[in-house]
Image (cartoon, rainbow, N blue to C red; front, side):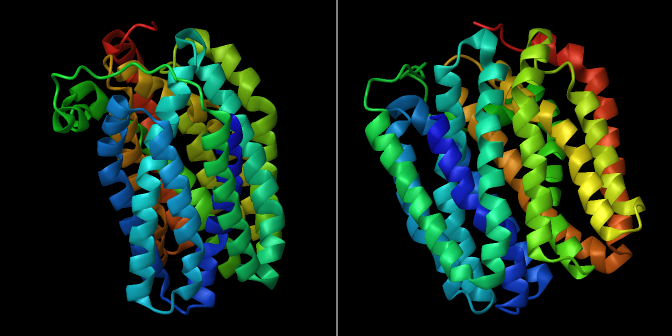
Length: 384
């Protein structure tokens, strides 16, 4: 499972990190249009994720994951065919459908395999692997992108074929699954999370975490390119962030998991706010990107494992996939809106002021999460 996630992240992020640049510079599509297409992709992924998550609660996870990997391998390199806005939106929607399966089902499967009391450590181990994969993918990908996006597309597609092979060959035994009761309808399970006021309250605050991830991964490269940095340096900085996360994620999670997943999320949001403020206030663009990304990694160390563990605690028995799917909906809308919002705010108030606005939002979420942590803990499921 960890190996499959490792390859998937390396294959996807080595390309996706630089796609905004390719669409704007090579396909000559307006940044606002690119951001809107990415938003539509994430909206579709999020809208379908609860249904696929709930379906996996009933029929199992592996077959859905294999199908999603094969679909992504076919669709991902088709960005090279994009020449205008309609073809961009067609490609983005196809990516949204293929991604709608993998994110909630893979998260639910990992939680199925993890002992309840060690979920944050297991999630941190997985995130460590993904951070290493991001580093190994993004750092050389920046240099490959400067020379040939076609080669980058081919390598990404091969990566997803390997993911499908890993699921097919390495996970052939019967997998433990907390199945949904057959008397419940699939539709009822799909929408169960959005009827849960505690989950909705948590999601209404914690959306700043995937939003900030989208800002760092998708918006900060364009911010840096427009102010004169090259893809190679950007890839080096973003990859260096992942090295730091990979080194510290597991020991940090092991240290804090006994306190529960809600305890330190407020502090993590405040650190994220400080990181986004660095992009705004440090005059030198290279230093701003480097310092802001490093500071962001310390918030990422906490929320990367604590948020999915928190969603697992909020899920009633037999609805783990459905709740992970609902969180994918929240995360997809938040992360997918980052580039579009940035294009709007850049034109309205400039990049630096936009980063200040994001920083203020993250800090406000940190305060709310601090005061809500006991309520969330009391209302969540026991760790069984």
